[in-house]
Amino acid sequence: MKSVVYAIAALALSAGLAHAATITNKDGAAIMVTVTEGGQQSEVGIGPGQSVSVCAGGCFVTMPNGDREALSGGENVEISGGKATIK
Image 1 (spheres, one colour):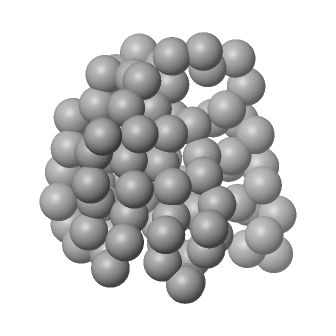
Image 2: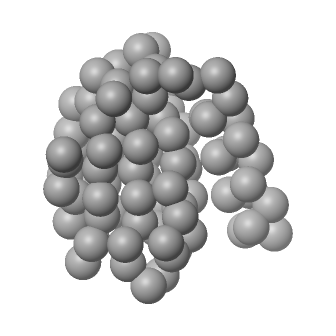
């Protein structure tokens, strides 16, 4: 069931996002991030080693460790050890 939710969320968020931010999970376990974009909040699951695209028009992302980052699109975010590094 979780994999279906992850797949649907990834597809919905990645469709047509040319300048989206990419979040990559470098950890060995699935993680959840909270994406707030345009006043709408959604939970996005990212499996181990997977990447998802979010934030075509700018957003706030709450990372697994509780840190909140503002993204404008185009960033590459790597999550390792529960902490995010933005490149």
